[in-house]
Amino acid sequence: MMEKVAQGLEFNESQEVIKECITHAGDLVKGAKFLLEQQLGHIAYHLATLALEEIGKATLIGMQTVPFKQNGSQSMLEKVGDDHVKKLFWALWGPSFGKKRITSEQIESYKGLAKRIHETRLAGLYVEPSLKSSIPPREVISQKEVENIIGIAEARVKIEEVQKLKDLDPETKNNLVWFSKAAQDIDKRNLIFGKKSMDKLQELRQPRLWISWMKEQFDKAEQESHELIRKELKREEPAYKETEESKWKFKMRLYTNSHSIRQKPLNWWNNISHYIKFYTTDKKEELILEFTLPKAVSIHALWWAGWGHSRRIVTALNIGSRGYFWWYIPKQISRFYDKLEDLENNSELRVERSPILKLDWGHQALKEQDLKHVALAFRYLPGPQNKNKTEPFDHYIHGLSLLSKNDIHLRFEANAFLEFFQAFKTGMKIYGDWKVDENFEEAVESKFKEIMPDVHTHLELTKLGGEFEKINRPPREITLTEAGGMKIFCDTYFLDTFYKLDKVKHD
Image (cartoon, rainbow, N blue to C red; front, side):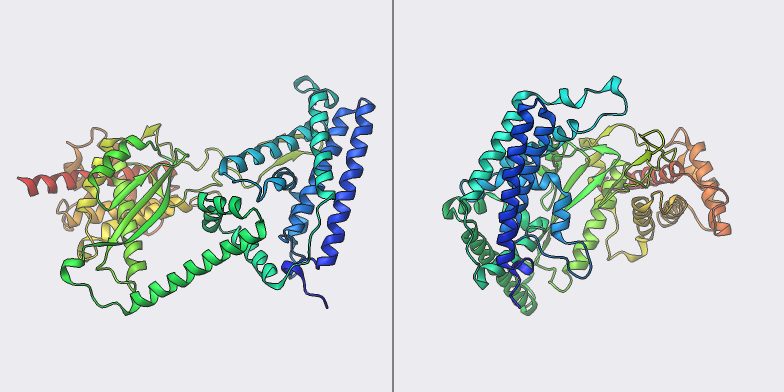
């Protein structure tokens, strides 16, 4: 039995499929030209687009990235057959591959063009249910647009007709299998399409040589990584003066649905913080967190040290901002489907849960003052060496975690509320604002009557939390708003406590 190329099509078979794709693309272009002469430009556009899709499919098969069905699952070839934009992208971008330096802007440009072509084709295929709000298909696409797309398709057919693929040696086959997998990994993909890699592709001008070079770079980096880990496992304890030197850097992405993120206040933070840094992304709801750990942390303790430190930073960020920051936020908070259609009336409709499971934090921007509160909270949050004082913040971060998982499929409002209540109650106990033989609600009122004008609203939450704790179940339905209100009650109490601790320290 012949060896499968890239765990997919046999080479001879792949050549036949590619040949048929190009032949069919040529036939589609001829059909498009004929329809254009018959004043059926919108149909001609569709055929020319199909021709480009056939070319894109052939390009993907030629790169050996389309394996056959395995273990009964849908094959990549079947998936690509359903992905019109992907085939159009490769039809348009294929001739540039290896011929010139590729940039992310260029890739995005081709993606955008592929998407526009597909959407234009659809606009010329179907009549919208409401003619009053739409243009008839034959009027959607201009003569110039049709001529352009036919010209592109015809040119691509001619290019592919003169292309000749050679059989692949075993090393190249293995490299292409590696490339297909590596391109699916987001971290490797960022390096694959980075400046250094694209410059090398332009220098070599042959994609297969470039893939081989790139695999060597990744293999070398992996070997070096293993060697570093081996040495690290054998490393002796560093000298005392070296233990505080930075050695490990963590980078992670946090999400927020309470604040918009801007770089200016983050610059203030980064100027005063040596080993914790914050950065923006192109999305206002994302925050990049970077922090370093010292040489004193051995590789054996690295995972736990990094995990614990990141949770401490995130706890401080939530308390200081009085908002919500986490590694992810719930997505399905109002509906469980992508699309709902009324088949009888041939229309799309939207049915959602009301209210949606999202807290209204108000329209806030993360400001310098918020970050000052974050710095204060981080300074006075007890570390692992103070186990007797960490209980309130264990409850607090459990509450944050439950909010991140709360969606229409599994509801955690009550659980999150209870965690925040217990964070507040144990905090009052540990910091000396409540003694177990005292009435808790009276202690809260005494503590907060000068801090919060609307303390009576929060006293109702305190009473609800006490009833919940006493009977070990919610005495009634607890809303997401109440869970969020209990969190803000915690934030206010902890910040006030930290300010007093700071004042005592500096007096």
